[in-house]
Length: 202
Length: 126
Image 1: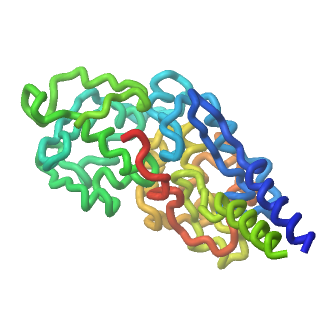
Image 2: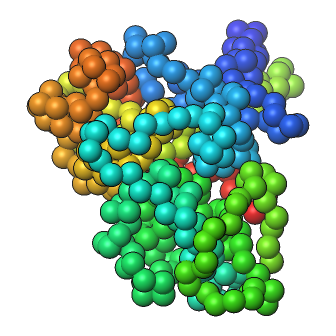
């Protein structure tokens, strides 16, 4: 009986000590250790050779805890926390496009602002054009059902880039206060605040 | 005696709660079409590690990785030939293929797929 009791206590305590966490502006960020993440094999002798997210992300600009990697990746890139390579081949053309598109067909939700700039800093035009999106505002029948099934924006958002729980990060343009025409906007595009400081548009 | 039973049960329950939720890092990809059939652990590809060092376009444009789990037929033969991972993991840009366990690091029985996606703790401040 005593043995079971102590086993329980040890197990209980171990779940606290094994997790790596970082406190940032009063928010708690937790990244599971590799040997307890139900993904890596604890018996793998090379686990200690791998970099752990907690070590990598500790000083990065943060997203909300529990959201994606908990990192504000766009901010990390813009502010030089990371400087990822753009190409391997010297003759690859690097194109960054500063062009916001406003998508008005969003039913009762605020309209969507799509910033090409943040996307082309990471991606090539051909990653989305033309097999996912036509190069013409309004010509692609984007809808949330397809996105949630992993099409259109859902190719990346919800899998690698910030997840689809963050509705108002895209639905960020109040319809009645918007002056002008939806579709392609005059550059420069919107300069985004860090995600934790962006206003929530209704 | 009863008290102890309750105590052990409670401790175990609460102690296990954080463990029962799978906590792959967001966007980790498991590749196990060939690995386990050939006696190796499944491969875990960490997107987060790579995007610190390379923009998406390097792999998804220059190297031709399709953005869909299962649509890239990656074999060790091709990697050693310099395709897919082998474009960098050749001992020049990144460490070479002799470090098997760094990639083949997954628990036996994992299914090919993207992990951590759609599994965040619900909406944040949005």
